Every structure is written in C-alpha cells, then in structure tokens.
Amino acid sequence: MLEEFLDTKPLYYDEIDYMRMPRVYERIKSHFKLPKIIHIIGTNGKGTTGRFLATALANIGYNTGHYTSPHIVSFNERIWFNGENVSMGILEDFHQELLSILTEDERDSLSYFEYTTFLAMLFFSQRCDYVVLEAGLGGEHDATATFENILTLVTPIDKDHEAFLGTTIEAIASTKLNAIKHKAIIGLQKHSIVYKIAEQLQNSKEIFCYRYESILNEDDFVTIDKIAKHENLVRYLKQNLALAVAALKYLEISYKEEDFYHAKLFGRLSYLDENILVDVGHNTLAAKAILESLKEKKYNLVYNSYKDKNYKEILAILKPIIKKVELIDVYNARVEESSYIQKALEDLDIQYNKFEKIEKEEPYLVFGSFSVVEAFLKVYRG
Image (tube, rainbow, N blue to C red; front, side, top):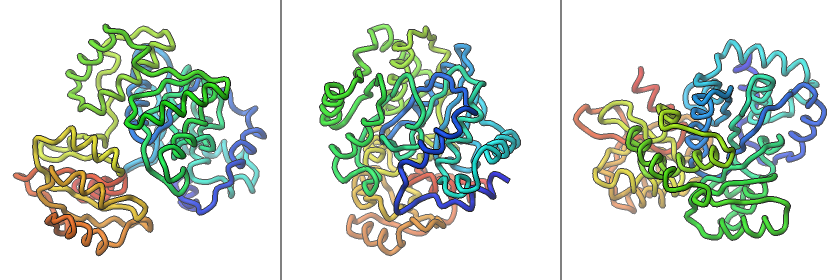
C-alpha cells in the first residue's frame, strides 16, 4: 500500500544525496513521456500561484496537472489533475507501477519527497499537456529540478529552511534561482537582492529572467483586479494571481476572468466558518502578509511551531492582531517544546492558554504550519 510504504520513509534527513534523484531518473526516464513543465520556486506562495495557473490552464482546455506539497489531511492533495485530486486508488496503481521499474536499492533509498515526485510525474506522463510542478524546499538540487521545463516562476523569496538553503537572503536566493534552466518570470520580491542575483545569473548562464510586471499590460491588471474582487483575494493572493497571469501571457495563451474562478488552494487564509480562518504559513514573510491582510481585526491565534522557525519574531509580527494565543498540541518530532513558546509569549506580553475548543462568538486564526492546521481540523471536524 502506498501510504504504508511512505510511512517507512523519513520526511527529513540530516544529509541529502543531491545526485540520487538525477541518477535514478537517468536510468528510468524511458518510462516517462513528459509534458510541458512549468516549475515554481520561491519561499512563499508557490502553492496558490500554481493552483491559479493550473486551474486556468485546465479551464482553457489543456489537460493539466499540479504537483504541490505538503498535504494537510490526505496524501492525494499533492497530485491534482484537471480540477480534482487524483484518487488514492489510482495513485495506488501507479505506486505499484513505479515499484516495478525501480530497483530494490532505489525503492529503499529514495526520500519521501523524491519518491512522491516520481509518482506524480509517472501519473502525469502521457496524460497532460502542462504540468505545474512546485518545488519542495526549492533550489537547484530540489527533486523537481530534475525534470526539463519550459518556464520557471519565482514567488517571493525570504528566509526559511536555513539549514538547507543558507542563512542569508543572498545565499537562499542564489540556491533557489540556480534552479532556473531557461526562462523565468520573477514575482514581486520584498528583497531587492533577489532581482540583483537574477541579473547576475542571467549574465553568467544562458537564461533569461523577466519581472512579472514587464509582461503584463494595463488590461491585464484591470482583469486581475476584477478576478481578485470576485474571488475576495487578499493582497498576497492577488500578487500570486498576477504571477500566474504573467505565465499565461508569456506562453501566449489567451485567458478570461472566469478561467481563474474557484482556484484558491485550501489553507491559504481560507474560511472554515464565518469566525475561523486557517493559514498554513509558518515563516516571517507569511506572518507579515497575514498582518497586512487582517490588520482591521483581532483574533484568537491557534498556534504551535517547529523548533527551526523563528516563532518569537513571527509572534511579534502578529501581535497587533492577536487577542490571545491558544496553543494546540501537535505530535511531531520537529515541534518546539511548549515551555519555550510560552516563554516567548510572556516576553512579548501576549496572553495565552491551551487550545480546547472553539467559542462561536470568538474570531479565530489558525496558523503555524500544515501540521497545526491538520491538528486543528482533527478537533474541528471531530
């Protein structure tokens, strides 16, 4: 069974063999007939940018796949085709096919993300006109960078996963932008160094980088405003939409407003109820985007954090919209000790308690990671 097989694989490694994925793909690539691939790299916004683009391509009439990660509740959220998550039954069939073309050593050594990337691409092979392929940690050595693509989209880059990507914006941006193979569209960036590094790479490699706004015209921006109003998109989601529209323009694919309707990816400032918002963001860039979007109101923040996240800075950013923090239990080896988060809250003079239940009259924001949202949904949905 696919899920039992994946459960045997650790999600994180202290050391990564960056050549394993390309080495295995070189041996088995005759089993893949790949469509046109649009690669998405960056720190935040990869999932929603990809879903906007994939939804539009499917609505326009192209057979389109979207590979995104991680999932919140069910594994098949990662593999989307023409508007639907691919069923676990179908994925099980492709799991068995993938096992049959891998050696025993390859089956055992491939990481969780490497294996699921192969699984997705095997399903998309011979089936899609386009695949929107979202990087994991994102960078030149990411599993998704193994496959040839026609275009790279670059969402906002900021600090995250420093242990793997570097401790400075310059290092992180260099690692991520080195994934560009041919042509790239750069979305709106907070750090100007990202544009500078893209220019340097363009001069040193045979690649071309365009800023998204240079591709869009006045009519495009008017249409983006209309879509954003119809879909009730907050500012950062509207920026992700603009990058997706720029991709269509670059590909010379005509689009209509309706092609982007109902394309939001769950977990990105999504309403569960009129008083409950959930967001899977987990870094300072996400916190700043949420503050900008929700600054008119205060919320009970249902929260927890991984050890490697700068949770004190994140909480400081969100403090203007926090009524109190409700700490939810998350059972994951990466989660920080509760006492440390409590100490950070006390230092910030933020009231807190343990999360127990939702009060119907209170507004809630569930934020901290995919794991936090998953833990909350288990309580909320019973």
